[in-house]
Amino acid sequence: MSGEGEIHVNDIGTRLLVHFSDCGTPFDFTSVTSVSSISSLALCLLPPMAAFAKTFAATFANSPSLAGTIFAGDGSDGWTELTVVTSDVWDVQGGWTLQGRVIYPGGDFRSQQQSFQVFPNIC
Image (tube, rainbow, N blue to C red; front, side, top):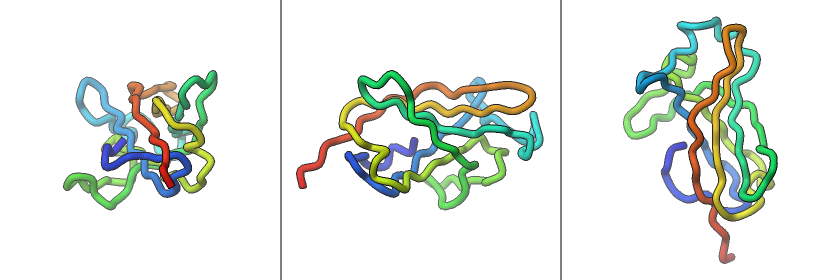
């Protein structure tokens, strides 16, 4: 997640970034499998007090840059992204949790969980 600004209830256009790494080194998806063999690349969002996460298809992050980083867009740098395009994703304020997941013939891997806040609106 980029950490650039707050997410508010019913926001549209929020860009979420998840960086897969192994022992601090970017996870190069292209070194372990053909990108076309990845059966699932997803970001899971768990709302506060919810029993189940909302799961969305992700893509490999592409430009524009984040703090000077140019995203490869091909899976070689470990960055994935999701841009929220509907207002019903952020349907409740409070503490949310995000986790990335990739499934391919050689494995089923998940990123660390990241907590963040969704803030209320005043207008």
